[in-house]
Amino acid sequence: LDLTGGAPELNAQFRFLVRLARQWATENNRKLTIIDRCNLTVLLEPNQSDLVDFLKENEVNVVASMPCYGEDNVDAQRGRGVFQRSVAALLKLNEAGYGTPEHPELVLDLVYNPSGPFLPPSQESLEVDYKRELMENFGIQFNNLLTITNMPIKRFADFLSKEGKMKEYMELLVNNYNAQTVGGLMCLNTVSVGWDGVVYDCDFNQQLGMGITGESETSESTKKKKLDVFDLESLTDLGKYSVRTDNHCFGCTAGSGSSCQGATA
Image 1 (cartoon, rainbow, N blue to C red):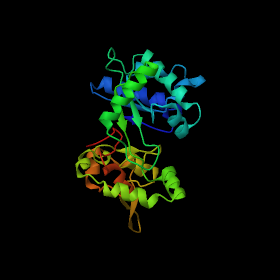
Image 2 (cartoon, rainbow, N blue to C red):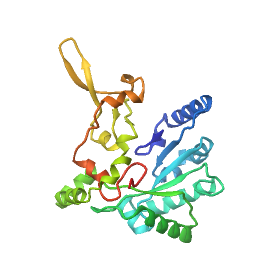
Image 3 (cartoon, rainbow, N blue to C red):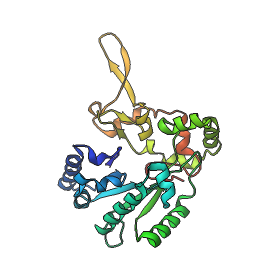
Image 4 (tube, rainbow, N blue to C red):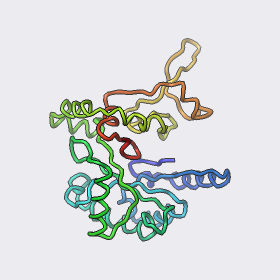
């Protein structure tokens, strides 16, 4: 169960959903990984002072956005002062046991995405740099670094268009297509669910409103409709529907690949 936002923790039903999912897993003796995709600064909000304790209590993995280990780059990308607040939040998570060898059940992963129209470097080598710099400078520990390619959609697409670099960036993605990435694509192993229950092949299709479509019988005709969770008895029902694709999909297949869990090749 992968909860993402914005800041999903600020949703009024976030804690209810986490507790219900953990209770279901316990009662049914099922292994369930719950992930909170966290922007870190939310952990320092006055009304979220107990959030770290809540996440720990429910063994929620934290996947945190940290686009660089340098202050200037992070603040340029996410806003002035964000780096120092992110460092404070990471230290708070470490203090609770997240990302430390003593608590392997409390996973803390960081996410890197490029600051411009270029592909991420090697995930493995960049993780070494992150761990060295964050430990030496701040005493921060974490488990894994995930590298994610910038998708040519929404705000990043607007940036590319404004800079006149959309064509150049799309050529970069297409020319670096790597067939070895296909097996790990998130659209093959993950279902994205919107707040209204509509299901999508991936998080990016959700941002674009590209829902999985099925046929809806009406008194007059058969037409396409977006599927939602109430249309499905089981995830296996989705096997009969094709994955919806568009140009942005080249972002997941370029270079070392990109998914919610980082590089795929």
